[in-house]
Length: 220
Image (cartoon, rainbow, N blue to C red; front, side, top):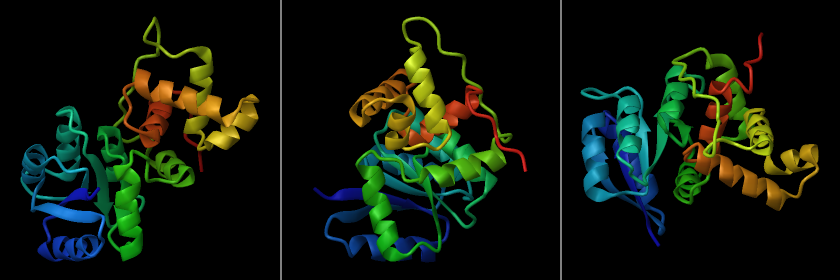
């Protein structure tokens, strides 16, 4: 099955470059291009792509607001934020808005194609260490505290433990070892955390751990 992609960037050269890379793969296809965030939102609604490559700085509507609008619409499209700098504070804001990860504009063609495949199948793109490094530096930016889980819809004590360890950049295997559980059990708990907190993927779970105050940024 072909993965459908929308490319949103105000630079025609960037859009064209991404299209060439993506369309060269048998399992990937660019179905639309947008030069601003507002157009990207419209294309997502019309074309229902699997993945959106979203630039941050665009006219009319920036990539962060566009990401927020796409997620709020209930679209199943996964957003990959495209940025020039790997520690751009706007990236963290975009992750909080619902993006599933980020790419650098100097990414290699094969890595771009694989990144699209990764998020299309519902996985988070960012390695835990990268996510942690970014959030450690920018956790003070655009805070969006979540209420402490409580009541029937809240997390169980075990699920809170798992969320905390996700926020500490631990893999499922590492969480399993620390909590003396099987990886299958940890995977079940992670799925429950995502479902109960209405999070799209593991990247969002890391953000939630910070926003809940379960993990504190490291100090330099």
